[in-house]
Length: 231
Image (cartoon, rainbow, N blue to C red; front, top):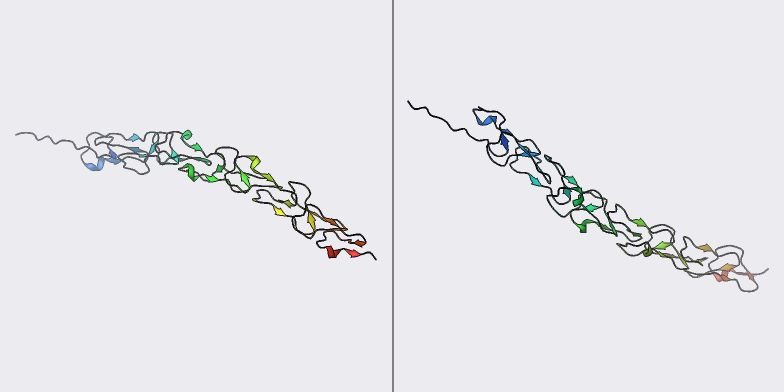
């Protein structure tokens, strides 16, 4: 009689069998996360190459790292996010330097940005001197900047006489209210008119003196009628 020799069956892609002499398909084991087999008949699984990953068991191929991510190790189940202030518009990235800095005048408080357009422009009242920033620098009190995406400290402009900016990151200057004045540029506050003086306009550079024969004892007078005849 003839002996019938049965052909061994290969484990399917995504599986492996570390033992010889297995008699059924249940001996084929799913590759663990971070590994794969792309062809039938493997006795071990391979680690995903750098720049790729396998998030699930039983994978027949690894996935390339998506935009905004990278992988520097073999056999990983996930890719790392580009850190704050950086972006990466390529897939299959293999090193952290594939993540590029957001340009000057922009910043990012998020990880994993995919495109340079995902970087946020510096807001009005701020500027960005450096690449890869996680925040922009505020203009100092007494200065303003009504532009976005500024890259120079010189974009912060001193308030003109008669106006002020009391806080940092101001998009504009406020005019001095009636009863006060601003003599110098770059003021953080206005000065009240002294006794005997008044200002009845906003944005005054100086206060007017009460007419001869009249007096006004309070500070911050905002009307000529506050000046009274001398007793």
